[in-house]
Length: 222
Image (cartoon, rainbow, N blue to C red):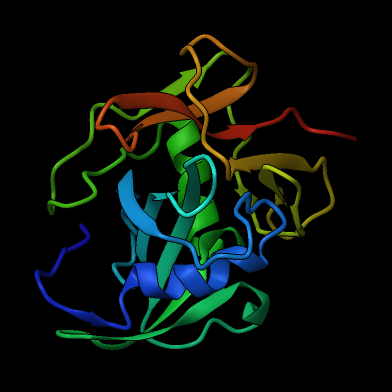
């Protein structure tokens, strides 16, 4: 179980994201510095208890229209080998010391736990409280089950509104599936779309609750 510490981080998460977001191809803002507010999300547990996993929704109000982005984050006590492209930055945690913060689409621990969530083998956790499940996070299993033994990330490709992560069987040749992590969040009915999906909520700038697609696993390709 992940333990959420009531402490400080320097620089803070939103400070790091304000520098990182404008470099992403899916960022919809202009040239102004992002004005970010935490809008929601959830956490997943690392079975080994080493890596923090958070799916954070942040709203940028700097542009002509507010935009809400999904940033899956991992927090590590040491650099992740081979994941330099996914490093958002480092921060000093008031309890744990220096933490390396990654875009979780590049982190094997987050990808495998997201696959476990889609397969029904783990449960989404409250973003702000330790040991409390988040029942508002929905998993919609409207296709065949998630194949056993998938791992990733293989390749990570950013599009105009999502990150596409290839996942495949461990240690052998086989069909490759695509895990889509939505980056620009939009409200959507629970029944909208196909494939195994994770839907969750966030707060709009006016305080209204929104609900939509966070991630989807596509069918395998030969």
